[in-house]
Amino acid sequence: MRLATSLLCLLLALAGPAAAAQTLVLNTDGAAPHSRADGSGFEDRIVAEAFRRIGVGVRLVQLPSERCLQNANQGIDDGNYPRIAGLSSLYPNLVMVSEPMSSFPCAAFTRDPGLKTSAWADLRGPRVAYVVGWKLVELNVPEVGTLQRARDQEALFALLDKGRAQVVIADLHTGREIIRRKGYKGMRALLPPLADPPMFIYLHKRHADLAPKLAEALRQMRRDGTTERLTKAGLAGDRP
Image (cartoon, rainbow, N blue to C red; front, side, top):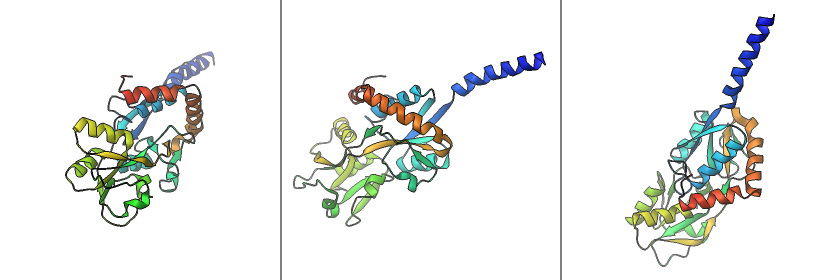
């Protein structure tokens, strides 16, 4: 009896660290400065810190937008970030963490000096391009005129540069970084952004128990200034 009790205690002691060492894989379609391969994007930092605060490891991977959602919904990966609210109705295996992690200033970019677009309805005329899988755009862009879908934001601005699109819809921060890095001339964002919605983490339903814990961690991070600090560091390109 004493030997059996000792063995049980040993097994529990070994199981404890293993449970604590749980690591989830979250995917993202985010581009710099939101996400970078080395994890230094500002949203990478926010996600990593939120999981650290609840004692769960996380590995972040970059994938195309629609594949991110499909992988997370099918349980190939454990979750996806950042996404607009309400996607659980389209992807029923995904559970939204109720506290926002960031926001997404979605802007129209153009080289046409005559365009003054500032609302979705104004996009009925021009040739518009956006990233396939971006639900915010798919739910709002008018299904009128010429719409093109690109694999990522880099491809969007290549279309704009070649004159194959008059307007591209991109994240304000990423669009400006691509323009600067590629040296594109004459491109500008039409402000204010078309939308700036809150963005959320989604988890596969098998991890639904973590959602309220992550929500509380994100609330604490916002209150204690961590979210603002990590965002500024990520936008500046500082190494984590």
